[in-house]
Length: 303
Length: 271
Image 1 (cartoon, rainbow over the protein chains, first blue to last red):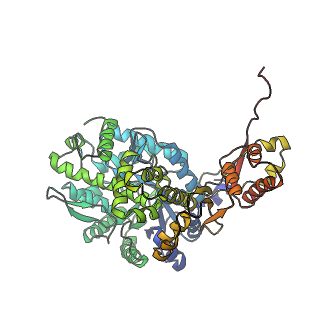
Image 2 (cartoon, rainbow over the protein chains, first blue to last red):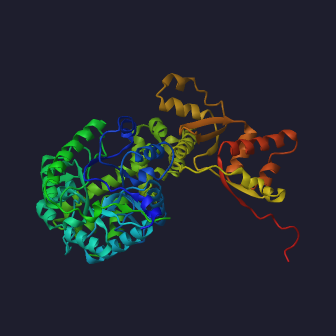
Image 3 (cartoon, rainbow over the protein chains, first blue to last red):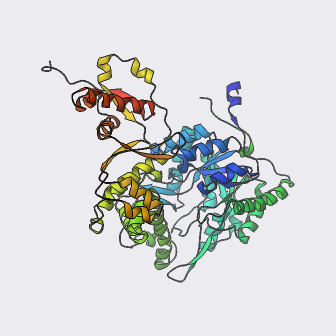
């Protein structure tokens, strides 16, 4: 590694607790500089310039950063939106985040953005499409990315591949890692009558580079069925905290993010949730786990 | 199970259709079809809510004038008809301004079209990417004939608009919920040009421009070749001074970021 490359080394995110940074908390985080392991932002919120971009540049000097994309639509049967990929690439080059992540889902069809993380059938065809797009993104960014498991409300007939196997195979074929959203695993398993712990136990620990935690809601549908919805609008549920502690036992400590996107509460509420995660992380540090490749420093490509 | 493309086309049609008809997607889901239909509606509701919210964020004053319920219904209708092309939703909704102004129900609001155009310009001023100003030395390196052919590119945060009435005052009063100011506004007075931009502290500024400067600025920002802009200023010293003032002001104000050289029209027949 050259000196120039070493100078560009981006510190890894420590296996501590962070929060998703949203506009209503910009000023409070800038003023208070709370003790957090990292901040995560939605990439698309910072494609533009102006005040929000300047605020993020400022916070970037004090916090490791994770850039979390929601709009690449890696599971679309068609081509990726090239302009969107270039916007993401420009943001990543400018911010030099420690982690970049996206979703195992699709949102774009025939050139129209459908504004939700839509479910993919777990088929070999879908796996090949996602692999191709993940490789394209990693080649353009010059670095590996993490892929987040979705929360789903429907499953498809004749889907031979369990989701954990789909993600493990995606990681094996492309070199990407997994952003393990423990709330999503719980929501999906509840909605499909499955065992969330079985999902966690089937994942290869070395692919997990980050964990997400969030709150969800329970809704009663028109047909009387009760469904868990991934709202990101409340505290992490007790069941998800329990599942998170199980995940830490299995994977070892991992950077852990508290996400809150709707009905955004005062910053202190997020800090309180992050403090709960930090305690669980501290306990898991005492166990003897090998650090995965995601915990090593990432070296940005020179130029 | 259909191919991935077939499934995505069917889901696309379901999410954006005016009538809820989850077939054939519900039939491809595990479990019984009515239960799947109820669950697919979650995606449909999210899709609509996210797009309506994006339009709300770009048109807050229009929404207040029209009332939340009416605005949201029209925004949902617009989103089904013209969904965004990209996931960068700050860029979504330029065509919502003419759409909402053309609705029969809004015909009595004479200022609505301009209010929507103004809000779109304000949204651009908030969200446009940061770009460095044009380096004036690049212009100084041109000879006079090249200079005449210069076609500028404006900063994407900068817009100049012709408004029919004191629309920026309506905009301010609506967002401030200032009923007293609203009552004092004379809709028949105050037509003219405004410049919308973000200042170095990232605040949005809306300033009135003299008519001549507004007209010339509109052309400069649209990339009209410089000699055409100067010719359109008219004859006489005052016209020349106006054109020079517009150009100098925008260069000094970092409102122009790049230029290209247009080809002059050929004189005489082509060989």
